[in-house]
Length: 125
Image: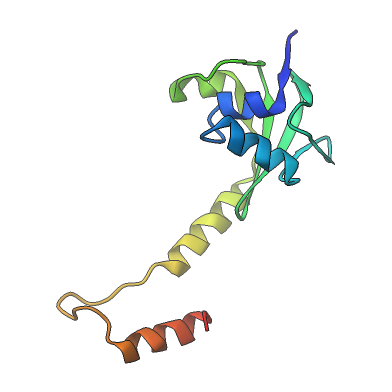
């Protein structure tokens, strides 16, 4: 049963694009192991459950295998089991749909007045 640094494992299973982003997330309190904030150098082992805050999504993963090297996307399922509730993904999808704007074909670009109206409706003022 091997151990590996949490920042290295998160990078290896493609949660973060770089190890630096992974370490920054750990330092920022966005990664928790057993309910406690994890430092980037924290060692993790098989069976540990990790909670990661990615924007509005609270992802929960169980470590199946400790990997030190980055793996192909199709092999990530061999290293981590996703325990994230479906409600989290639904919440993310709902917010994505709310931010999507639809204009009728042929309407052209919004005028300054249209843009201000859109911002007012979205509450971005």
